[in-house]
Length: 268
Image (tube, rainbow, N blue to C red; front, side, top):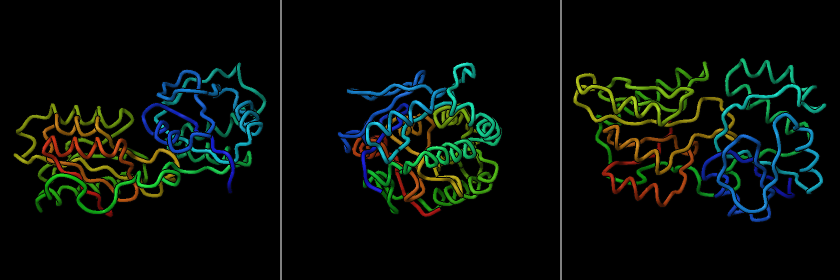
């Protein structure tokens, strides 16, 4: 499908990068959701999705990308428009099923309105990590063994929809990313006593959950991630090749080099 693109934006630099690549795109922000977009913005409310879709159709939009971080907002049921009222039972059910279930339903709803849902990686070439060493020195076999252990942990947790990242040092799991996010987990790792780390520096592993729809909520790393990994005393980052975005790529790779870390893309 071809046609005008709409960016449904959350917080972070990803919507900004997509908007730079598609200057004609309609930029949509939502009440109560932080964002970094500038320029001509369309503001909508989650309670009135019918109005959002009508607006997009009037602007000639046929393609939609969801980009940026969005926390689940509190919804005012008294402000629901007719479409939201009709969707309420499905949304309530999905909210009890975890993030994957909710995001899957949102994609389904957008497609039911006649739009094509695309992933950021489908629109902007070179966003995802490639396989191989991307920055820094090649990791030791011990560090790669930790990366393998981390991949096994994430694969085991995927069926229960928990996290996209973990930290392993000396074969021990020091942290698993949950609803609080990557930065919270890495701060906890930074506060882990040396006696629990077996003298191993450890690795941060980031991957998509098995079966995850990569059009939304694709895992990502960026300069802030690198800073937190350094503070946590880790040796580097291993990401799933083709399934993890590298935001602000040049800056991120340079920060890896500056911090003396490594970044590797692997098929996990």
